[in-house]
Amino acid sequence: MDNLELLIDFHKNAERQGPGSDTDTLLAVSISRLDKEQPLRIADIGCGTGAQTLALARHTNWHVTGVDLFPAFLQSLQEQAQQEGLSAQVSTLEASMDALEKQGEGWDAIWSEGAIYNIGFRKGLQLWRPLLKPHGVIAVSELTWTAPDQPEEIRQHWQEAYPEVGTVCEKLAVLEEEGFQVVGHFCLPPSSWEDTYYKPMEERFAPFLEQHGHSAEALSLVEGERREIELYRKYQHYISYGYYIAQRKG
Ligand code: SAM
Image 1 (cartoon, rainbow, N blue to C red):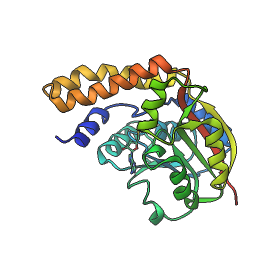
Image 2: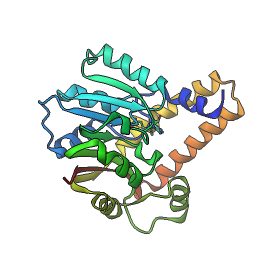
Image 3: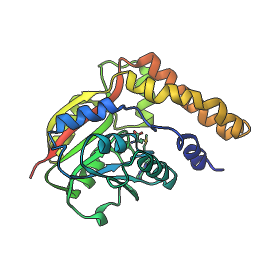
């Protein structure tokens, strides 16, 4: 198994592949002022196994299309949607988030939790804006500094891992520059990292290592995740995901 296959294997049975919670998703829905009763067309880009896709479908009449690069994640989402009787509202699309122009315009909203970083915040906004209806909504979570004067250790870690990491003010400015009017924003609380993401992930470490015979590659993956968790716990005052809700201007 190569490193990508290992990564997919590690995450495919998880409820979430990134920080977030149903409470966060539903807060973004309420900030968006989108009509929950209407059968709106929503794309959830980089949906993973679809925790937020399902939350959107459960609490609205929207039709939500989960978009991801990896079929194993989409299959898990489809199975869960079927179990919950949500198949009529949830569909999936195996595609890369930087090649969605063939899907055409006309989405009422684009959701994306913890995924836009794969192509970068600004580039994602540039590529996804034309896919929205005029005045369509984007709701996106993005790694954000939550306090100034970050200690060198955490600053260096995230600047190397994701050079676009920035403050709330910087993210709001990018949204405005790229043709969006900000409707609202908030930062994910520590429970959305710990309870729904890091703690369930820690429980998967031992069985994952066992399953892969403690191979060097599996150990390296687990060590990388352990390091990120350790840094988050030490410096959570300085870093979180910002959740940004904005409307396409025109
Ligand atoms: N939104 C999910 C969540 O919060 O649990 C998943 C977040 S995970 C950190 C990022 C997701 O982006 C993964 O599911 C990954 O497969 C997907 N992804 C990465 N690169 C992609 C690309 N180029 N196109 C589509 N999806 C991609």
